[in-house]
Image (cartoon, rainbow, N blue to C red; front, top):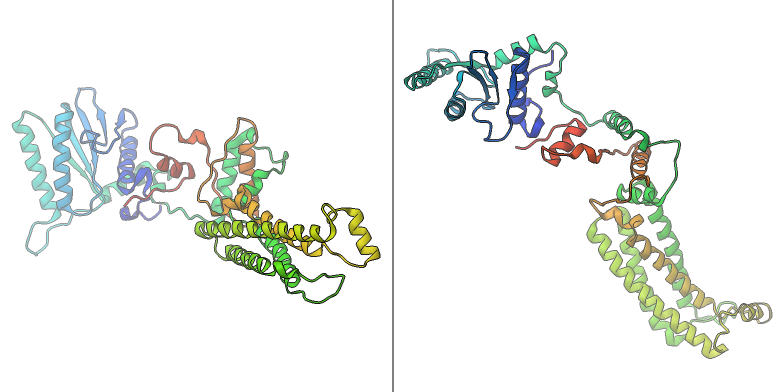
Amino acid sequence: MIDIDFRQIAPRCGGKQEAFEEFCCQLARRKVPTGVTRLHGSGGDGGVECFLDLPDGSRVGWQAKYVFDIDSLLTQTTKSLNTALRIHPGLTRYIICFPFDLTGRTGRRGRSGVEKFEAWREEQVGKAANQGRMLEIEGWTATALRSLLMDFDPSGGIQTFFDETVLSFEWFASHLRAARAIAGPRYTPELNVRTGVARWFAAFGLTREWDRDLTGRLKGARKRQKRLSEAIAQTSRDPAWPEWPDSLREVATAALEAMTKALDACGNLELESSYDGHRRSMELLQEAVSDLSVLEAKLLVDLEERHGPGRVDSPGFRQYMAEYELTFPASNLDIARESHAALRDMYDWLRSPEGSLAFCRAFVLSGRWGVGKTHGVCDFALERLKQQLLSCVVFGHQFGGEPDPWTRLAESLGVSVYRP
């Protein structure tokens, strides 16, 4: 038998108080196998958690109080008893369950817990008698509850109220096996079709795959940044590497600075993925893309003024200049275009679900029945488990009706909801 500490009862069914109430009702149901009716509702149970109607028309009611001192117990129980007598006219026996043992008589001043309880019981029975009601009051103390648990719970089912759920790697593995079984034919691992949804979940879960995507794009953009910086600084008369136009050096330097700021901000996303960091990176990327677009257009105009409209991107012109003139007049334009494309790629990726979901706390995946939503979710959760990453999978049909969704979620996962 596990150690029964009522202060450590698992906060199931909404909280510790609710768990204790359910625990006591489970014991009542096992003590009286048939006929016990459970009532629910905070303040709406009519003074009893459950009741039993006897053949003679009388009623037995159980009330649970999750308090740990006699004064609070008697104060709260008085209110519940008055309500029960009013709501249940056939009530003749009232069983009070509480998670502590009454103190006995000592040589110290003041009444003991036993004395206080007995005095209160006599007072309440007397009040009922004055109203023409026969009433018995019985107390199920902590010791009595433990004894009943040993008598009526040989399988250990009720003892799970005192289990501690440890969310270990093994727990998550077991949970996903159960989720896979619940999914049934909606999840068939053999039909593994890689879709874009997998990359969305990779971003949402901040997986190594998402990290590699970000790092790869940053690495490529940094190379373009370096080439652009070297091209802007070029002042030699090497015909194979033309000098940067003086008239566009200031515009190019400003564009390079914007590109550097944007990539530095994106680099910080590798260290700390935050919504504000993502927003700031997007703003800087947008500014840099705009500046590089302007620079690209000005370089094109400059080259066309020198070599004629439409010739710069002509394959024949480029081949002639390379083979016969040993020069590459469009190299600066190409470098600017490559820088522009690299930043545009980074901007589009961070704006797409594949990049932006890394900075979200929730997202909704919608689609028609049968398109593979369940398959994709289960597949990715199991893939994450292989990477030592943890996931929970629950299904919509588990959230119908009462109680509230948060309690439903906890119960679906087999864990406790703690509400202090």
